[in-house]
Length: 310
Ligand SMILES: NC(=O)c1ccc[n+]([C@@H]2O[C@H](COP(=O)([O-])OP(=O)(O)OC[C@H]3O[C@@H](n4cnc5c(N)ncnc54)[C@H](OP(=O)(O)O)[C@@H]3O)[C@@H](O)[C@H]2O)c1
Image 1 (cartoon, rainbow, N blue to C red):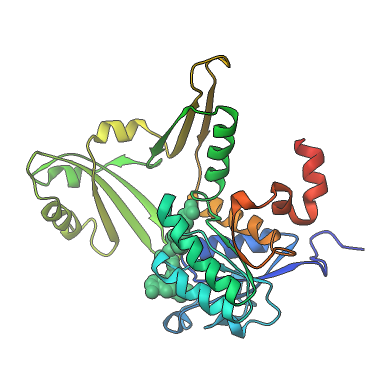
Image 2: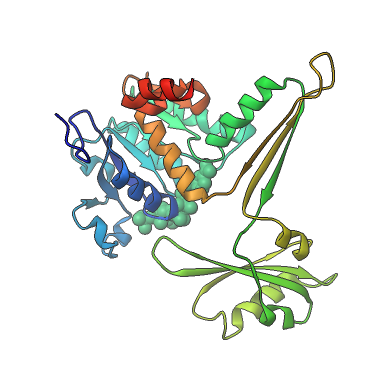
């Protein structure tokens, strides 16, 4: 009998490759999971000496996925430019991969094809585009389009939630208005995001340098983003609004609305974990989330999901 909180024999063991924002979120989500196990964290040799949060004390930290014992899949959380090489490395060692590169449309297809060829060569499955967007949001968009065919879809991104005014940035000559927000990078360091509305003809790089040079921002990574309207930005929350309007016709005017506020890293991590549940029994080659039966994303919980959601 399985004791509550104890992971059973039918668990899926996963390596997290790259301990940045998404990697950390994946590793933490794996700790919470009942059916998936964090087998190891794979880091660049230069990062191996960096201390991880205490919670990861007992997790093997290695420099290559092939060094992980009994691994069923690798969650690739490396920068996009490194994904293809890292996927190749894992696949040639027979390790299925899940990735979530921020690619759409034709670029996504080319990327998928490239991974597909490698996965077929080594006879291993791969799941591509399994994050928030692409990923979960692709499923929502696809469903909306099925329900309201021939319509238009509009996506509005909401940039940030905890924005506050920054008098310092506003004092820089050429800045009309400025807002600032902070976030924690995966290694615990603080990053500041400064959104600036500029006077016409002002050099954005000069403004960014001036803001970064201020004692208030020294010692912290500060990213400066010029925007058209700070007031408009302030009005928005953080997240996304997706609206699908069906084409006028016999079926009437359908309007579907999806609004979300979220932590992108967390949602991407949860989608990557869900994709990992679909790995057992998956044929070799690259699969996108749209190729997978929704039930497979629930793994062992599939039968409960059907009762709950149908
Ligand atoms: N689909 C979505 O919605 C979505 C959303 C966000 C991100 N993503 C994808 O998730 C992946 C990870 O994004 P992230 O925001 O977590 O990136 P990140 O914070 O920059 O972290 C990437 C990590 O990869 C490792 N790494 C390996 N080679 C590297 C190199 N040459 N330069 C820098 N780091 C390297 C590093 O970890 P170590 O130091 O431990 O080696 C680094 O911390 C990307 O492929 C991105 O496209 C998808």
